[in-house]
Length: 397
Length: 164
Image (cartoon, rainbow over all chains, first blue to last red; front, side, top):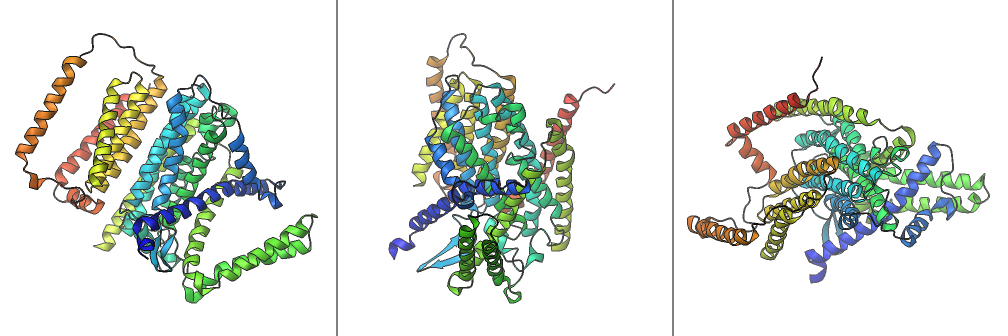
């Protein structure tokens, strides 16, 4: 029991679990994104590798690992090698302060579903994301390629500019919750959807949430702010000269950053792992109902299959979904599975928004991008912060 | 543990600081400066000043140095060539002497008991700093804000295009 209770052992186990889950999510997020965009554009998306393309991420990983790792002779070698490493590290490091759920008891051990809780958690994430820009800027510069350089320049200008409205948008809900620790931030929002910071008075943070989301799109270099890698102007932007795993690490850094900002939006505005309404009103049944409906739909479509293959695959999915629905009813796992479900559902919803926007919107023009943040987003965020702080000061006394 | 961490990051900070001067390429110098800022932030953390550490990374490493790197990249500044004599031979002993004297006097003026121990300082959280800024140091805080505002307006006036 001595070993199980030691801080180092628990931390190592938790880090291993979080890392494994994160890496799998990163790989499958790519599959989900391709599927979502494909369905928005009325195509089937990846379909060849495995049922419904489910093994596509595995194929992608094998492809990226076995590709030739090209080191162009004209690059600045130390910085060229440092850049993907830096981008990846700074993207992964923020996960360590994100709380996924409340305190749980596994056998003799009581622990939080979080790697560590800093009393400057929000600032830590901001610091990590502000360091992440070096990865992209250095990749662009050290490649010694004009397209890569322009990509790197664009990204550093864009990330500095959008960091300001983002920080201001983060500051407003922090004023209401009165803490910088992400765990306490979530605890302050418990008790239903009207206590979440997005709806909770003295001043509901809807404006702040929208500003945060826009800035988050820009910080992660996603459409419509993906000018650093605008392929019709810049070949591939800052990672033009990268191949194999070095290219993959930029890719993983982008998706990891997406997960971090989505989780941060969940924690700041949407009440983290808290259910939107109380258990008496049936909040604990929601995941069961959702998975049961999904399972039933899959079974129905399996019975009336349009494609030959679906006759075999869809019933399997249906049974799996119904099984998951059953697991959510077990009281043994409910205490940690339900908070995790709400956290994953909210984060996943925001991730879906990222994909939806990518499938829908065209790219900004460069001058519009800069004008938008400095002339519109920044004043709006500032005004929102002012109003919030006045109202908070007025009501708390 | 604290002492080992302190020695590691102090060493990194000093090596990076020397590297800032030694490197001939501006980008390498700027990145070494980022290294100095980062290791200083860790030293602040060791002393228990979390907020200062985070502010150090966000403001210095994450904003100011990014701007430096941005400008160097934008101007595409190349490596500099060494010109003139190096003053390393008389300079290095003088520097060591100066640092030694400084350490000696600090040791003499501030007795051992008043020094901050690793992790022994507890006023470094955001709440304490906010409280101190808005009560004890309110006037300096406001004066600094106005100074920064003046600097911002000055920058805009200087950078503005003439309107015909």
